[in-house]
Image 1 (cartoon, rainbow, N blue to C red):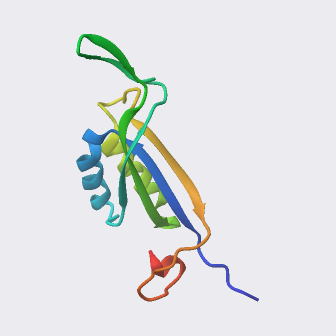
Image 2: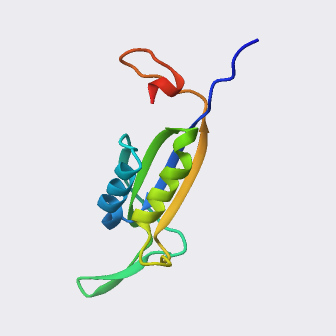
Length: 122
C-alpha cells in the first residue's frame, strides 16, 4: 500500500503594484518567504481607463498589475490567502481592482539542485 503524499498548491495572486511591499510583509509574517513576482497587464471589472496623449484621448484597456506565484504545502494555503488579502486590500472593504487569488492543485514540485520532490522541494 502506497502512502498518500500531502498535496501541494500553487497560489496565483493578481494585485495592484502599489500593494506589493505590503503583501510581501504580510506573507513574511505568516512565514511564507518564497515567491515569484511577475509584471503583468490585464483588466477585469475596471475595464481600463482613458489617458490624454498629445491632446488626444486614448483608451488604455490593459492595466499594469503584479502577479505572485507561491507554491505552498496544504498547511500554508489559508494563511497565505489571508496574508495576501490583508496586504492587498484597499481600505477596510476593498475596491474594484484590488485583484484576485487563484488556488490550483500542483501535481509535482522538483528542486533542480537536489532532485527533491513534493513538500521537501518547496
